[in-house]
View 1 (cartoon, one colour):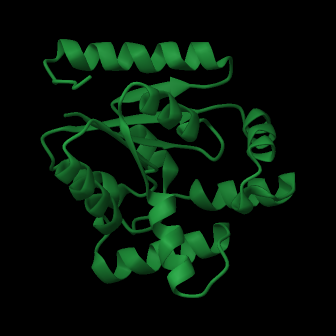
View 2: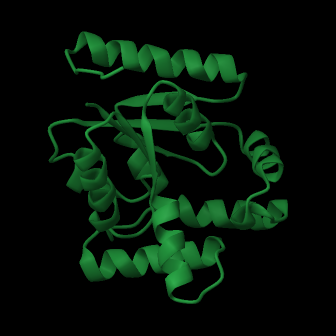
Length: 192
């Protein structure tokens, strides 16, 4: 089995890559979905602010890699190729780097393209104006020494494969296929 992790900027295409890999027989696990369940359990509204606050709270209580390790263990128990999105803090990466089968993809795109994409996907947490989008992103792009805090630049810098999504789906999929082919040649076994 192969577990692929993904990080990237807001609206860059993490979900698009995940959907593509699901079609290639990967199971999909989401940090956001995990946190959303906890938010609902706490009786809060699911939005980007509560995602940030509850995610940070869980990491403070249980460790920076708690959520991602929970998802990893679930994927391992189901013994299937898996895509797990979205890695956002260096503490998650540090914990995951201890795994033998850790592979991290990152994806980025032009900010205006990404904003247009989040408006189209119409999720609850993305119904914001451009200024709010830019402010949310600025928060996630801040450097921090705290391994539990969101720090996308640090995560992207640690990625094994850096993908660009400024063009078509086909061009993005080609980059994903190239990364998977390279992993195959490195003798990582893919179950298909």
